[in-house]
Image 1 (cartoon, rainbow, N blue to C red):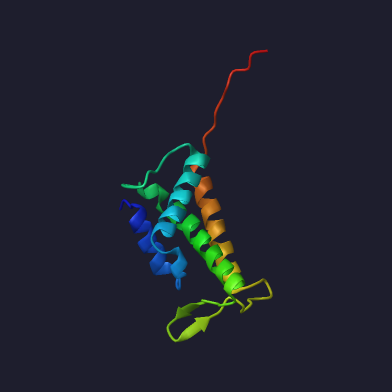
Image 2 (cartoon, rainbow, N blue to C red):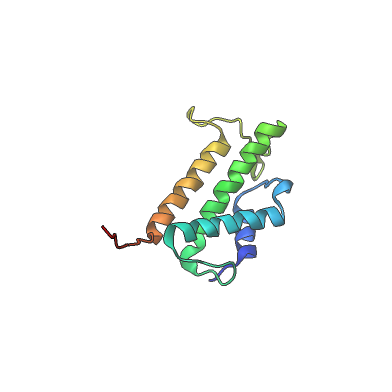
Length: 134
C-alpha cells in the first residue's frame, strides 16, 4: 500500500494518542516532510510526498511518531499540562515512571527513535566515491 503525507498523518493519529492541537494541519505536514528529508539525506533516495513506496512506510511512521512524542513531552514541560495517553478507561500520564527509567513519553520517544534508526539501517545508505587528484 502506498502512502502520501496525509496517510502518514492519519496512521500516526491512530497510534499516537492525544496529539497536541498545536501540531495539527500544516505543522504535522512539516513533521512528515522532515522525516522524508531524513530518509533522502540518509539513503540518497527520495520517497516523495505522494505515492510513497511501501518500503519507506515504517521508517517515515517511526520518525514522525518520535517527533510527535517529543513535541508532546515539550508541551508537558512548557505548559505544565500532561496529555498522557489513554487505553480504554486507563490514562497514563507523562510523569509516571517505569522502572525508574523516565516518563512514559520519554519511553515512547525512545521506542520510536530506536525503531526509526533500525528502519534507516535496513534501507541502507548512499555511498559516494570520488577521485582525488594528488
